[in-house]
Figure (cartoon, rainbow, N blue to C red):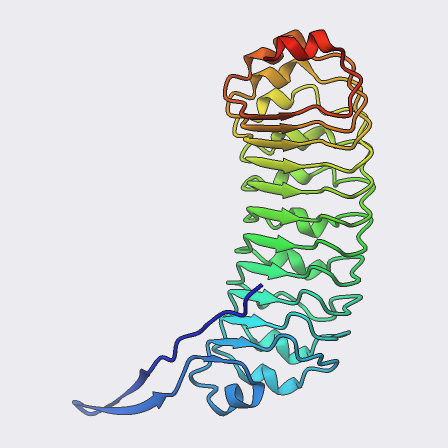
Length: 297
């Protein structure tokens, strides 16, 4: 991924001080609002809105970072962080926090102050759980937990009802929380390369989902009422243990892509041909006879 390119901006921070009936303007010129060096950002802390501090191989991040209280975007990708500085909790204006590719085994800070955080990226660490304070992330829309060591998803995550994209790819999930339907705004759900054998009863109540990736799990069946998920456009179920599909799948009128390779499906439901908007269908690696394949052409 290319390092983001920030243009140099010159902005004026005006402080208006009322004294009697007169206004006095104190102006400070900012050399930039985006920085790639912590010390430079600290030297311009009243201007620093973006800090990209990736690829530094830093094991310990200075507590001084907590002085950057105006920071909106913080990128700490590909360092060697094992813990996070407690002063990170001071950064209440953060919209984006990127912590991908570190050595984090736990999230040792509280997320209660991050009221405006929209994107949190934690891919490729060694995390096994999310902290209870995650439930305070009321504006979070994008959460990447891929390539970690999660065996389950905590209830605190199901309280982040603002989530639109959740990626838990390449973990060790054995099950999903029973109340996952609380994530009512969820649009994209990536759960491929886990160990899921079944889906919870309330799964199909996620009505806003447009894309579901459940490939490379141990699923033996999908919900009978999956046809009620009318917004689905992409459904990936490759490399599971499916032997059949529910009849209701034909009700997915907006389905554009259906990936079913590497299963044990020997027969397709008669209603399958009703998927008129289907553009991509992959059935390779299933024990389907040639007659059934011909009917689909």
